[in-house]
Length: 399
Image (cartoon, rainbow, N blue to C red; front, side, top):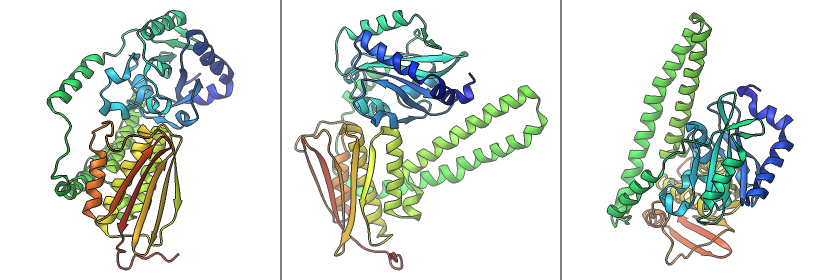
């Protein structure tokens, strides 16, 4: 089975065997969740395809680039990972790097690279939703039981990645540099957006264009190489393509061009599509707007507020769907972001991520004279933005 069509061949020929394998491992070892993630070829994204003990379908929508998430990191490094207490071993600000943790509410896991023909093409993830001193022993028994083989895969079970020193350093950094809210945040936000826009433009117009030039040179070299050189050239092209994709993602995160060229709603839809792939939650847009463009300050701040609200719901709410409702009336823009997942104490929220998201959202709302309210409880969370609307002259929609 070639690496280039690995996923297609596996789905067509061995799906029942893989499903039986994850169910068997879950039953024999008492894991809460077991999954096999597959990648189509070296450098391609990974998806969790075969699972046992899943709480829903959310995890199947996660798409992990190499080096991202548990699966992506394991694939890229070729080394196994093990965390027996996620809350203790991972800095809370890094939780978003592991979307499967949110999707399945995991507290302990072991991820083993799976090789075929000497290449890492899949990942076995075994996990618990609780913490116990016995979990590491369970993972060791799993490795002994597998004895280096799972169906038609070779299992990599030595040279585990050492994250303890990294986690300890991050904890020390948190102690010496505690998270705080800057009272001058509202004065910084506008300058921050300008800087984001500048860096985003430089990445797109500078670094990305240079890489494209290199790609064109590769095309010119193709006819002057032997078979070995052609193979190496293909690898170089793939590397450049991955770098270009990463630069694009960074540029969009800094300042999406859609926000400047198309406006608030298209930019928000585009960002929501990225969140769906990253975190697995479906983001449903409801309602409509009577105009395409608004005042630039309103578009920017409303976009950032909604971006943060949707991201928080995807990361922390443990929900399958996030609903975004937009409408405007009588000169006011109304936006709500609703999830029906795990709520939180709005008066004394648990600090996760940078710990500044809710405060930053409120400051942004203050900048545009808007009202921002957040209500949360056992039935979920609702974030509502009501902002004065100023239509850009000549940009009204002809709907």
